[in-house]
Image (cartoon, rainbow, N blue to C red; front, top):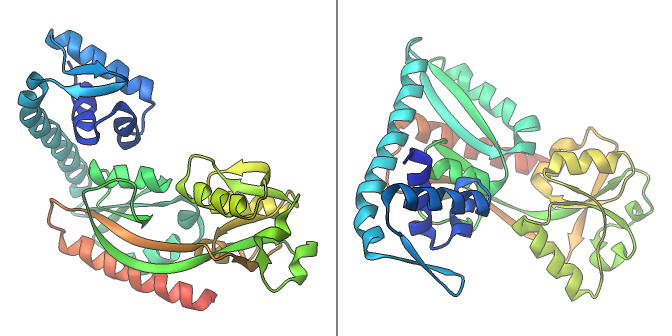
Amino acid sequence: MNLKQLEAFKAIMSTGSTIGAATRMGLSQSAVSRLLTQLEEALGFALFLRKKGRLMATPEAEELLAEVAGLVDGMQRIQRLADELRIGRSRKRLLKIGVPTSMASELLPRIVAEFLNDHQDVVIELLTGSYDMIERAVLDRSADLGFVRLPTELPDFEIESVLQTEGVCVMPANHPLSRHAEIDVRLLHDVPLVLLGRQRALRAELNQVFRAAHLTPQVRIEVHSVGAACAFVAEGLGVSIVNGLLASHFAHLPIVTRPFRPALPYAFGLAFRRDEPRSLMVSTFAEHLKQRLNASLTTSI
């Protein structure tokens, strides 16, 4: 048996399914199922009963869970300590931050630069990706804190609310829709769209808005970050609906934004592991990040 197999077992026990475990671990469902099968073969007995497509933990699985959870958590702490010792050779402290990709390319560099100017003994490690990836990074200790959309997809976080914004319609600067003060979803009938990927919760909410208006979105391109959406819109390939905070940081592109109706609210926060105390450095950076993000939102309005 190996650590990855034990991590899969722990994740299945926590989420109740291979699908949930796959989401938490950032793997495919088939990969998690394969890890579980390998672990059961190594142990010589079944950990779950398969009934009508559902997994039911065996008594043996329940008995193993406490030991496996302790071992997995211990190995993750060792990895974190190794990272800190590696950085510590230069007498610096390591701070791991998880943020969405678009935020890392435009907004975060200035915020980090200001923080490091006052904290010369800190090294920043940046993890970027989707919101669910950021949540997993916080849970498995790959990140000390993560910028996430609320409510979170996964449990077991301590959350500090940061800001709220709304969805905006982004379009090329010379687009016919730019003459409108705001963009009602009905104006997007047969308009080519550049939208965030189908697997995202944000996309599901937008699809509901289109269904309520009895419209079928004419998706031309699917992307996985607000920055990519704005870049494709700038090339005249369609219009997009994204959150207003991140869109405001791509104003240097030949695009314009208009409020989208019906309103799509976006709430964001910082996620921390609930079962671990925060260091002073993490708390200090979190406060700095909240202040700068709110100042940025005020400026962009």
